Amino acid sequence: MRYVKYTFYALGLAVISLLIYVLYVVGEERPAPMPPVAEPGKIDVKQLEQIDRQKQKVKEDLAFVLSNIKHVHPASFNGLPEPVQRTYDQLIAQVSQTDRLLTNYDTFLYALRLLAELKDGNSIVGYPLIYNKKALPIRVRWVGDELYVADSADERIQVNDKLVRIGTESIPHLLEDVKKLVADVNPYYVKAVAERRDMFVNEVYLSSFGAVQDGVVEVAVERGGQSHSAPLKLGYYSLHVAKPLPERWSYRFEPKEKLGILTVHAFVLDESYMQTLQSFFTEVKRKGIEHVVIDLRSNGGGDFRAGSMLLEYLPIAEYNGFGETLFHSPETAVPGESHPPAGSTSFSEHKIQNKQRQGLLFKGKLYVLTSKYTMGYATWIPVIVQDNRLGAIIGEPTGGKPNHYGGMASFTMPHSRLNFQLSHKLFERPDSARNGEDACYPDWSVPDQIDDWAAGKDTQVEFVKSLIRKRA
Image (cartoon, rainbow, N blue to C red; front, side, top):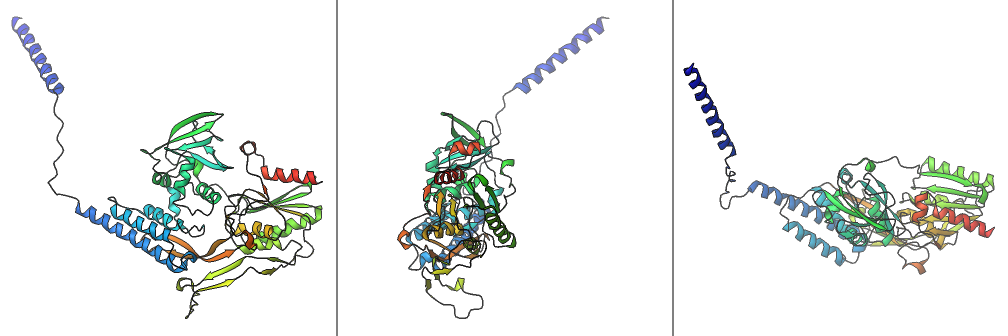
């Protein structure tokens, strides 16, 4: 019995000793392992060589863009513009000084900066993969001169909030950053393109503006006279998934005002477009419509022949068209032409014989609605209507410039394979007395109103209706 008792005590002491030992070992503070010390002068040579090779490729791509600007673009006809050369030199120096591996996104941004110096909305570089990057959980839209939230996937930032700051910069300061990447054709074009390209929400652009911190962007808004802010995380949000585009053209009637409204979102010369025009003006005649609105507020351009076809339904035998100067180069020569012309060929403003659609000519009041989103060849219609006094322009100044570059030639950079295009023509509006205007300014300035926009009310169409009622 005594032996068992002592054995039990011995076992108990052993267990206690083991526990004390384990606790001591586990609880002992051990120093963290030291990182391996790199040998003096040892570097990743392969990585540096890869960085240098990529830098050289980016430089060669930019040199290719510059060479074609020199040979093709009208702005270089009397020598390469100094701002283009200066920006190119700055970009090459920036590439040389970088210590990271450059990507096609870098080449894309560098090329944008270079082309922006041409002040030409048609000389641009395309990169569809830009839309595969992360974005903020909001969509934005200009209403008048203010930037508002059009959609939101974050309850802290609400639809119709007025944006005050993105990152550390105010919206006006961000617009100055945008101008480094977008041709400063006019202030309306810059705003429209910044919105259409998602430059205020896309990760690539926001990073280039220095607005991103650890994948988060601080956004400040005004709502009901009070300030609100929230750190928004970049991500992949459903509100940025491409939505079905609206019908390219449509029309409706307002019988009370004897008003017909034809909306054209893009000028595409096809059977559907031509049939829509004929159907619309057939209905105009049948219904006894006295006022017609051509709505080009969201029209970014297209085929100028489709725009000219609209004028065939007006009772005019001829009208003054745009002047054109074509700048020749081997890069824009007709394929197979052994001796392409040199220099330039000019066609001054001239009378255009109008192919009238007899039996469907509209003889009432014509109104053309425009906005900052009216660009490219869509600018031609309001300019021709205004300069030939065919009707009234209502809305906001156009994003497109009346006197502008056009007639695009396409190129592909040798290494990144990014596509870009350059203008090789210069167009001048019919009324040379207005050559200094940077936009087609409306006869009646009727900017968007946030209250109307929030309520789903069409500010410009309502203005036309009130105009009709006053004249009745």
